[in-house]
Length: 333
Image 1: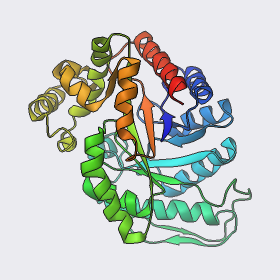
Image 2: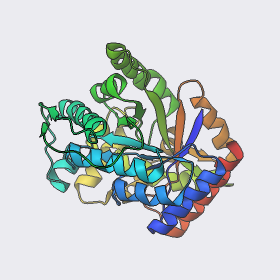
Image 3: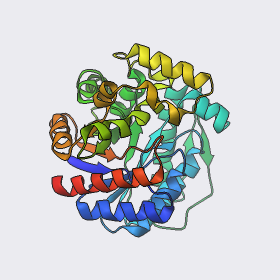
């Protein structure tokens, strides 16, 4: 089982340094999210700062850019990294798309399928001069154009993030890999996700790589480790569309949704999350405790992407948490 890493940095220089240290510690792939930074720019910074580790967007928003811009960005990043890039795409939630990015969200499943198809066609045909045509909920018609650069590879792996049944099944059907939500305990992966991935994969004969994401808080004091992780759980608990994920904690989920709608910042919902709930959704505790909990993913995940807790914490505490996580990564790799 490969161990991946999601770095944090108060600056792009610090982000790149964390990626370099994770590479030296044995990380297989370094993934960068898209919320406070552009995933494309962050991936580019890491590409020039590292030499061998895989680089992925985990995730880039699929509908906030045109499929062609996404494909051209992927081609550039694959060239910049020497063929190490993996394009991770996610739909995001309705509010994020419509209110933040003025992007069409309906119907997300069909739009994602068409987006992946267009991206793959552009990657495959941009340098040949052949027509690039696709008609659907997202369409493209490019004729008489050729990208005058050779690609690093003939194809770039496309990973899809999925939480709900339909999007997860689509990842199984058309994705080179599936990326989990940052909170994906082993029991959720085993009982909910893998059957959906398998159902989608059966439609096409596909075999996507299963990459689980895990907020990982390591500290000699297990209580402190859990307290660091509470705001990360709270950040996601405030999202109504994640109700299924938090089905075992309906009261906490409802309280977080209400607080967010009342104006409480998403990063400040950690007080509504108990240590028990934080333990259920994150890998938190002493180094030995985290290593033991990590082993529960053996046999059901191809890779686990580890990230330090970041929400609701001051930079110095995030920095300390990341340092401990990279130390753990070095001991496990």
